[in-house]
Length: 186
Length: 431
Image (cartoon, rainbow over all chains, first blue to last red):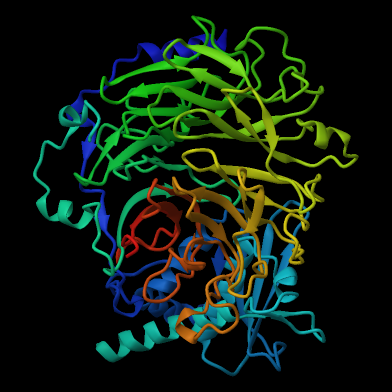
């Protein structure tokens, strides 16, 4: 019976007038722009609510958000992942790596990402780098399988069991370039 | 030749500059023209992408968008729109439809007819020239289970689709509410169940799905879990296979056969078909479809020439090996020369010799086009440098020169939503 009602609704709702059915403003030629020259946001842009950073990083992250479209896109992606929580903290433990992210799937299905930044290295680059590792997991990338095949840009450290990806390296460098470029243009 | 209603539905406003940018014929050697439309699809899974369909003439692109592209679209759920590449306008095709769940548009050769899934069990057939839609059902009786994944012939008369309904065709439905493939003649609104195979009956529990129809409606390729020809029936292994049904002869032929002509050692699915039904591209997990065994342990794209009875690996590196990650969702040009597909592989265009600007390091799906005649594969979803975001669900026009897909790549400087949008790529015709 419910099906019948549904079909009848489909068939009996009058069509909208034709002039309301056309639009052109939503179609745009695509420009292959360099992300480095994309707009700098003048106002304050907030981190998504599922990302926690120490107060000592607040100004730095605010500058990243305003200066880097790539970092804004990263935060937008992370912010849309409702079952994810990201915590960023300073730590002595990542050595010899400059930073490391521990990803834990909790019993309730939530994903906990703990980003540990070492005392050395560019925190802008490192935060963006580690956020990209989190997004790799949101994208469903099977790092173990990728590391087993040549030419994928993924390598595994057999000693630590950790992975490194050319993607995260490239994105970290891109965000650092966007932030430093914005500073230079001011 | 535009369809009869084209003039009536043509733009009411002047869009000279945009029309120039969108004009279909690109001059050989010029860079491709790409246009974009927001979709606001936040979380499309690579194995179930947003659906796009291109008319054979490349002019019309039907797509699903959750974005409110017109003021009359007052909801944030999926609706179906059609982009007219000549006028640069999109039209709202499901205006007035109150049920959620409109999906998977299939557009006919000239863009006149549009078939799509609805939130109920029935598929709708929309005549865009007449601005009218009707349900794909027998008489006044709607299907008693879900119908899905329509594919329409060039003239819009024939529609192949999958359905779990048991009341679409005459006679008993041996596998009950499990999906079968049907062929509908929309002129007479008659239906044939075409996935029964040589035995004329499917085993209980066996499913047939994902049909694609040739331009003239004669051939339908589909996936099935049942052994539909005598050779497959003798095999002990049970894998998903691709079959080709000839509506003139009633014959069903196995398309996914191994290099010895037997049942392959892995499943095959997601077929695409050329205009005359000679070529069928599909995804397969099998390792023995070609003589040079596939050792990459991921799904690959293959193409079967059912006339020459040969199979070739499409998702291949320049040296002929399988790619280093999964490939899915093939689409074919009319003559089978161009195969468009999505792949997570990073070594399809330049193997491991890629220079730094060309290295594909994004670990997610990109869109590729293989020119079988030239023996060359190019990445479509990229700019001066490869994009870092996933691109999925490609469709292609009959020439192979227009490719539409969804990507999470930013539309422009202001786009940091990081969701999927529509990209329509128009390349130069080969010299």
